[in-house]
Length: 424
Ligand code: IMP
Image 1 (cartoon, rainbow, N blue to C red):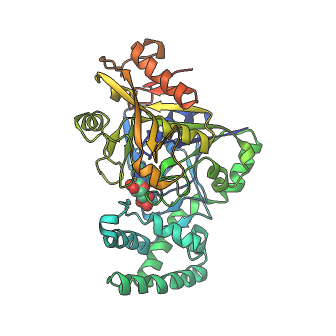
Image 2 (image 1 turned 180 degrees about the horizontal axis):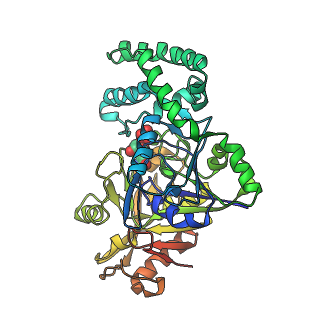
């Protein structure tokens, strides 16, 4: 049975949690394939509001096995906290499986993320300060600690010692911080390991066997295409690979199993942190988008920068991910605007672009080429079918579809699972 990838086409916060949750009842597995607790999913289902950082979005379905795959960096304290919260809220959850190969976020990663950002001053990336970048850096430098290491005390102790030797020099000599002691970390992480033991699995094999047995697998991306380490607005990116090509690599099966790649696209754009956002609106309209869309970060509470729909970004995301269809979210936020500007191209470096320019300097100076569509006044949150949307709203959706070159399959008109209209 084929696998489906669901990922963000913008700068994260497209509403992927709700999209995955909506699509999940037909799935047997939901797999988180990158990032860590820098992501935040808000799901409202059956009257319950859940804020998740690490646990995959299929968790509200008892029939789903939720997998945290190899390419995720896991802060065990956060994961266990989330599981405690789910248990306390009486939510019936699906099974959870954690890959033996996932890397751990250690206390020194969190500390280094904080102090490095502080030292960068006005050049700061505005990371979530959760230790994501330093954990991925250690993974690439081959000094990371993986989930499986916790179950061999000798190995864990040796690896921790190696890592701390280096990290303590950096913390003390570069950042003027206190060195960290291995004993406490060792003890804490062994206690986490005991609690995590029932979840730890060879998830690659589990998924392979699932696919072979005809099960449906959904691979859930965090962040978004424009925050991808290679394809995003480097260096204003996260340290992992949200694009679709990485999903199978992280999950540990071959790419031929992936048949559908769904791009979750917000009806406007937002970004948290630094970096270019060509269609940003810093005036009252942008303010209004932020208020209507409740654009505050789930993880850090930071106000998101808001702007108008950017078709260059959508075309780029369609190209680098091979999108098969789009879930368009938060269309309801656009009600009440007289006109809706859409960026249909950029001007940069003396030429026009219909896609993201290949050179970062050009992207930084990109000026949108606008096309204006008529808005609609009525609220649309109660609308139950696509054909009942105001004709201007239908036109807006069809315009994005045409200009992005990818069909829209579902349109979100509110935060609740049921506020999802089938568009094709
Ligand atoms: P990091 O992922 O914490 O290293 O942060 C790097 C950049 O990615 C910062 O600009 C963050 O604001 C951004 N970022 C990380 N995770 C998310 C997310 O889930 N949504 C939106 N932006 C994110």
